[in-house]
Amino acid sequence: MANTLLMPKATAVWLVDNTALTFDQIAEFCRLHPLEVSAIADGDAAQGIKGMDPVMTGQLTREEIAKGEADSNHKLKLSEPKVRVPEAKRKGPRYTPLSKRQDRPNAILWLVRHHPELKDAQISRLVGTTKSTIEQIRNRTHWNSANLVPMDPVTLGLCSQIDLDMEVGRAARNAPPAAPTGDTLLPASETEDLPVSETGRQEAREEEEKELDADAVFAKLSSLKSERNDDED
Image (cartoon, rainbow, N blue to C red; front, side, top):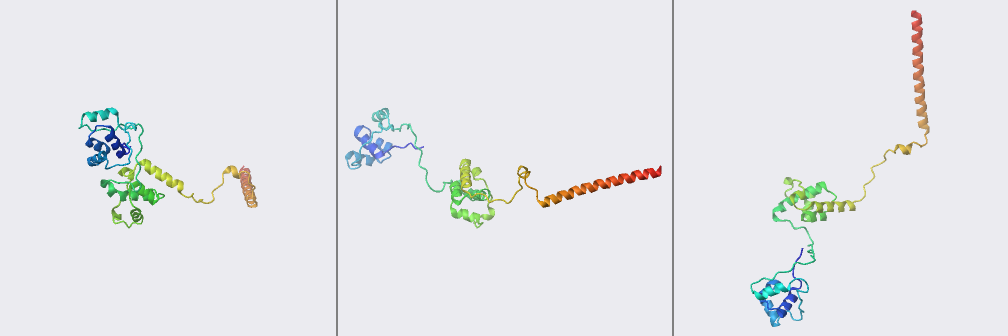
């Protein structure tokens, strides 16, 4: 979160005109050079700039000004802001510490293998690399391809799990719909009332005839067995 002085030159103009603070105190508080504050007091600098009261903006208190006027060695302190303004995010690749830059190729290889749906720009945002490096690792033309080992960028500390999940979800939303895999069997509830074809009727009749023939064979065997028993008697 940012906690910096708003309009430092305008604040310096007001402090020079309305307080007994030294030039060094004003310069340090406003992040200016003491000679520039001296030039403001002489009217040689900041001409046309209207002074801004830091007390009205809540960045300095009357008590803090009084302490500075009573003690020339006192350093003015900014008041805690009531509303914190987030710092503007810098556009471009993510900054990677020097100690972790050697791990970036391994992280890129892991992302390319486990999340092929990610675009080069998304990988670049996650690990702070260039598109040419990503392309070299994809094509196995990187100078150190033989020694690369896929490693999770979250484990390496190159990005957070939240950032990775966000990029993967974004890639999934932008991905084209999956192609149909082909015809599949219909559920039984849809096939119960379908009309039976002629081929199906023929197959059913053949099955019935087979069952009838089997019954006839067993009946004949039973009669032959009974006749044999009569002859023995």
